Image (cartoon, rainbow, N blue to C red):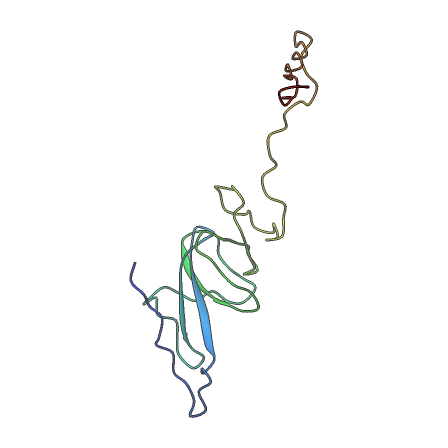
Length: 133
């Protein structure tokens, strides 16, 4: 994967100039992330930038990441909000919010079967005594 981030530029006092994060979305999942300076367009070539609040969950688009960190593999909802995939393998459906609960873990019964017998207690050897006692 090539790094599309712009180099960090600092002011004369040593502070970094603010940058914008861009996420490339393919079929509802974040596939890559890049950072540019606020005045620049995203670095993903001819991929269309999604309108704020109207993100297509089919095909490829680019969104500006604001207010949170994005990671490759995150899901995006139709409003542009990001969430960890949490085991989900399909995109969120239109109208489903990003904060929707993830996949529930498989439930395992806690009661033992009737055939189970308790294990015998281990034998504890007597303590060692010094000679002469």
